[in-house]
View 1 (cartoon, rainbow, N blue to C red):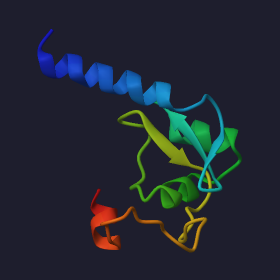
View 2: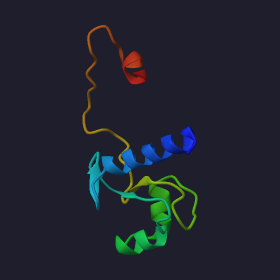
View 3: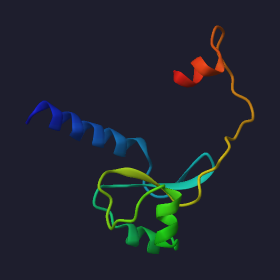
View 4: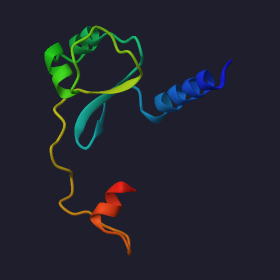
Length: 100
């Protein structure tokens, strides 16, 4: 197997292993992990959300199935973070902190 294919397979496995099965939360927003080939209509029906809203919540153009393993948000993503403040390590500023 060529190296690029091996790397792609191991990246997909590690992405799948990072997230739990079923619904969970990221920044107080409901999200699921879906695998390549998952039908968006099936997800919409399962979670009782319109298909249009799923595409809107995930900033996606409408299409039938997932073309890659990915996170799928089931609610609108928050525009603000949980905390009003960000902590920077000594010697760093907000510009350098965000680039790290």
